[in-house]
Length: 384
Image (cartoon, rainbow, N blue to C red; front, top):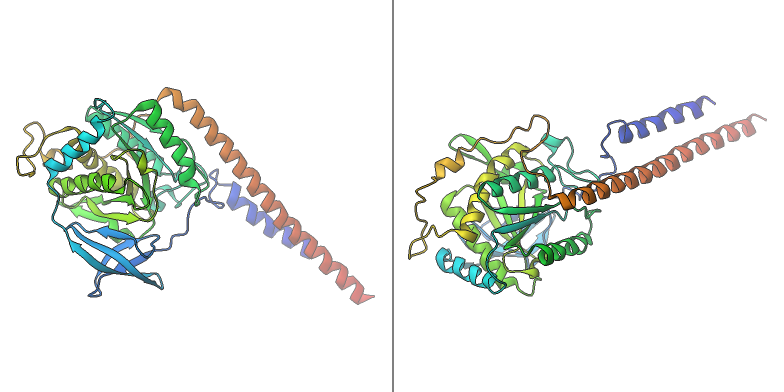
C-alpha cells in the first residue's frame, strides 16, 4: 500500500503543474524550438531560421539573394544566387498601387490575422507557446494601434487556427478569404514570431534595444512575383528609413495564403527568446514603413527617400513604448462584430484543451496505480 500512496502522490505532481498555474502550458500548442544556422560559401553565418528546406531562399539587407542547397545537423548551407540592386522604390510602389487599383479605389484599410495563435515570448510571457491566444496577440493588437495612429483603419481578426500544425495555414486561409471578401483591404498581414536565437533578432540603435522583423514570402504562391515585388519595396524602404529594422526577406516553400492579393505578407515579429518589449518598440517603425509603402510618396524621381516635413526618423524612433507591466498592450480591441465570436472560440478551445489534458493525466495516474497494485500482488504471491 505504501507504494500505491507514493505513486499517487507522484501523479499529483503531474497534475498540479498542468492545472495549478491557471494557464494551459504543459500541453502547449507550439512547434519545437529547433534552430537552423545558415552559412554562406565562405563559412560565414548569414541567416537563422526555425525550419528550413533545400530550395528556400532569402535576401540579406544588402540585397544579396541566397538559396539553401544543403542541410546537415541543423546547419544550412547557401549559395549566392545574385547580387541584387535595391529596387527603385518609387516604381515598385506605383506597381503595387496599380495592382490594388484594379480592385477599386484604395480604402486605407489593412487586415491582420494570426495563423499561429499559440506563439509567445518566453522572457515576457513565461512560456514559448500556449494552447489558445499567446503573447503574439499582444503584438498584433499593438501593431493595429500603431497603424491606427497613422490614419489607417485596421481590422484585427483573432480567430484561432490551432493546433499549430501543417494544416494551420489551411484554416487561416478561410479567415483570410473571409476578410478579403468582407473588408476589401489594401493589404493583409499574417503576424508571427520566429523560433531562433535572440541574438539574430535583438539590435540596438542609439543605445535603445529593438527587435528586428523578418518578411516571409511563399514560393508556392502562383502570384509569387507580385508579392515578392511588394516585399522588396517594404524591405528597401525600411532599410532606408531604419537600417536596423529588418533582418531579411525569407522565401519559403509554402504559399502562406498570399495568392489572395499582391500586398499580402507574413511578418516574423522577433523570436520566442526575445523580450516582448523590444518587439513593441519596433512596431511604430514598422507601421511607418507600411504606411509609407502603401499610401505616401516620400520618394524623389530617383526612388530615394524624401524628407517628410511633418515627421522625422527621430520622431518615430523615440516613440515611447507601451507599458507591459501586466503583459498588456495599448492596441485597440478587435472590431465589435468579431469580439464575441473570437472570445467564444477561445473559451471552447481552452475547455477542450483542459479536457484532453485531464484525460491524459487520468490515464497516466491510473496506469501508475495499476502498476503499483500489480507489484503488491506479485509480492504477496512471492511471500506465500
